[in-house]
Image 1 (cartoon, one colour):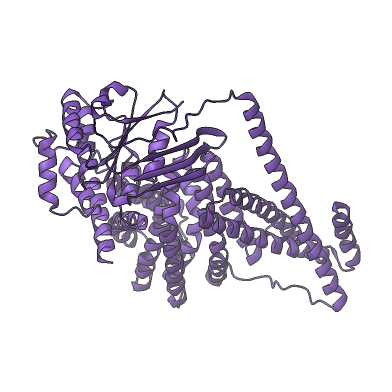
Image 2 (cartoon, rainbow over the protein chains, first blue to last red):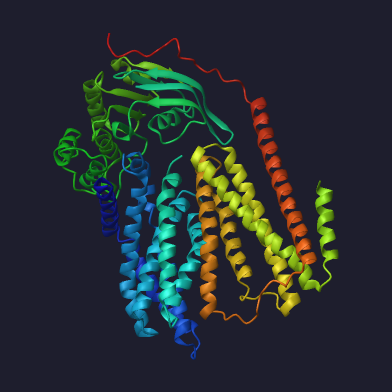
Length: 213
Length: 194
Length: 228
């Protein structure tokens, strides 16, 4: 068990180091999310309520996550590194978990900028809304890492990942928006937790089959 | 160490390997020869478990921690340094006394000076030498080398020769090559693919 | 057999003596149920593929998902007709069933995009299988999500409930359901058979065109250990 945790730690650490060197993903995500929020200001009619703004926040989050996830497996596909990792004696699911943790870190970092910006430009975010963001982040990164790995090995990877992810992201958007605007956010948060539990386990268990033959 | 019976590998409709049967005893040295496209790489990937055969059986008496693969690609992160790459693999393979072993290997393969440079700055020969370090890092029982001399530079080739002569008999080696003469000094058995 | 199926389908609308909207109900709901079943079958075959690694499960899973998607599209179509007949709109977000099928339809269309992006082989089979499993898990989760969404996003304006069914109507419904299921089964077998024949023909053609390779057998040349 501790060996597994050590493997995951080593892998996640490696992802963060790579990002630190290349600075590819995080700046792009930050710029993207802020630019999107600005565009939304112009997309919303003057009398639109707060509720519409929350909807747009979630679109911004999902697409920012997509920007990050699209690049998630790029380092592994240069020089065939992914095969080296698959050959190693560690559990293949550890590869997925390390990548998911790193993706979460990037998404969270982008949101540290985006959420205050949103609160400034549009509408306040209370505790349930923030908790909703955290829970939905987990879901997006868990499923997204797996789907990104699937898409990364194909010809049309840039287009394929959004196509694969968006239907799966729909429940997360419902949960997230609900936790922000519903008078009783408890149900939505519970639903997000359910989504996370179910899909994280599914992703964790099926990663092995995506990277091996 | 290795037992293969009636190995067949199809990719969709393309039959890459067919009816292959052979044995490699522990400590043996097998050279796989054949023209480009004859399935050498596929066979080696079958042996390490990266692909599963369409038909037939291959039994290898080593698990993933006892196998080292030297492939066409170096399988290292170009953004990380040699040290960082080997450290990662060292952790994943649970190599005892990791730092010492990494230092020793880097030195032996002439990469000590460049150890803290990102692999992106390396020449092809240097990356392949790093790949060799990665392959030998965990002291595997079975070494699988896919055209090992093709990407190595002069220095690397000499180092590999020296390494192989030390390992021969103690470890099992399966190597593919275009040029069987290169490996002849190790008195290998030959498997020719068509 | 196909004739029996067609006849059964034709008989059903004649039995229904209510308005058009009720008539559609007898087709729409069975089609929806059949679509769910096909997706479930696809996921089951996918699971078997991952478990046993036997190639034929890939084709079976794919065909099941394909059928499910076709029936899903039909569900959207008949649902739209029903909406037009009942409420005079071609689409409504208030119908949970309809919205769910829209999401699923998009999901499974992506399944085909995934398949077409990977070359035939173990990788394509396994990725498709994993995605098919995600799909079947998505069905209940999406349903819950849509239910939750209606609380604040789209209030339930129209009251959707199946018509109150008398015994004869229920019988008609069952006949229709059986007919549609039968139709789906037939289509499934036909497509599966067609694809298999296709594959066999291709392999046969290839074998005939290819020169016989000379394969070295090494039984008599066991490699020995190194030594002089």
